[in-house]
Image 1 (tube, rainbow, N blue to C red):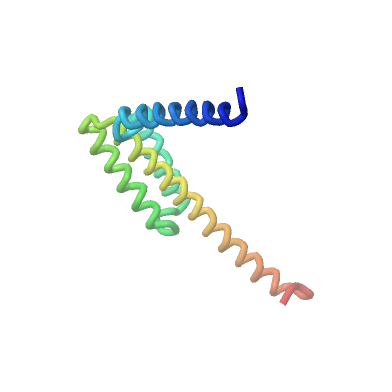
Image 2: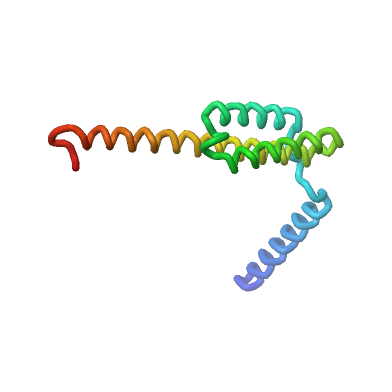
Length: 128
């Protein structure tokens, strides 16, 4: 088989595979399976509680508000038996809560660093 014919065959096979993959995606529906919604909701609740304990309500208020809004939306979808939507919203709430906790921890660490630098600057011979 010549090189140009082999290239044409490879291109044709690749095209057929791509068409089949697109057709499979289109027939699957609007939302991909997102996992078990009750577990995702419980995980989001746990992560929101952890973020709250880390001080995220005051240090990362926007992210906490988003986490709670997404959790509430997940619970609404769960009651409506829209399991995929509920799981996706719960996963979004979990991501927001994880971010909020990290942002709160960073804020606390930055305050501690600033305090340590200020204390160091007061020592004789320390950086000025």
